[in-house]
Length: 449
Image 1 (tube, rainbow, N blue to C red):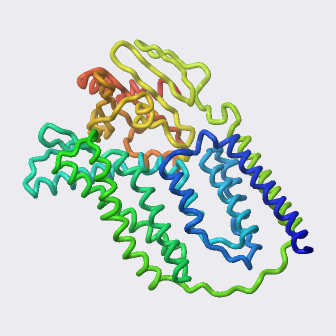
Image 2 (image 1 turned 180 degrees about the vertical axis):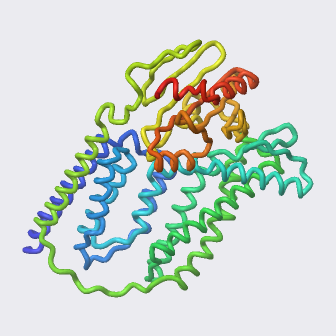
Image 3 (image 1 turned 120 degrees about the vertical axis):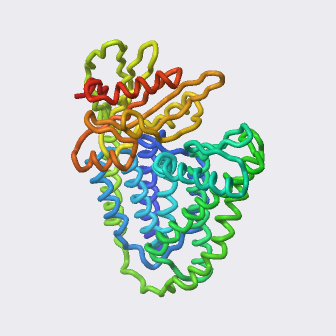
């Protein structure tokens, strides 16, 4: 009875803190978290499967310090990804104190559930998708299939097959990793051993490699058997390749890794009795810090960097839009200049923004215009077709590389914008892009400097 009475404050305190984090998520992260995405839903399934705890150890402060560090970073750089990390670390600290010291696999699952992982796999894997298309085209040609490659598209018998974000993005890459950690969690519990952080990282790299191989063979199968996107077998082919080239190898590989690399769990002595009041105060203070970060992140105009009054651009109508976007248009060209507040921010990437307007991207490729490497594509929406190009620009330097502009912005503290030009025909696009890439005609300098 006495023990039950002592547990009541701890239970009430844990419920209070959990409620605070729920309110913070509702206030600041409701529109940030992709609640219905495959990665988020699969992550919810993975967490209880991979969770392992030591009920005798309830005094660990590792997640407390990690959460404080995330709060400090989020206060300096008020982006929702860091706020999400602060909430995750705070929740893990709460679980550590209530259930006992937990393993790191649930934390990894929560990281993979974050929208930033979707962004990374959709945007940063573009060079991999181009290389994957080239490899698939080469293998098809070696096997005697008359296929041609242009950018991320393979042409065969009048049909087009693209290695797009649906192949290399969230639908397979994040799914593969979550399936991998679920298999790992199962065998760690079964064999009563654990892999350390470095070895789990190596395993994630192996899973990423297997995923690339699966996508390569998926592309080859789609082309060889002419399985078009509207065919139900298009999706089933991806599932089959995921199972054959990722899941089955992992079912064999992971038990071997756990057996040979795993460290046997040792019994730990019971920790000293935990002072419930001190623990509750630590959680309240941490939750307050996370709440302050959420408040700052949601401040109106916190990410606004464009000038309040924009200069005129000869021959164009200039309009200021939300989220640091400037629209510049005339009868022949539509230009969006999307200022990026810092190297650590996600950008308004055209492949995301135009899809939100119902357009599909076709023939995405990198090419040189006026001596600069930029990305080009065709936008298709029913019978409507536009030709589009985009690059990153700080007024003096232009690049098509995510890593290049972020590194330059970090080292030289320069502010970049993504410039997206769209026209109704290819010739006009080339002419407009070549004009904008000239130093004296630079649109970023004209608008923002």
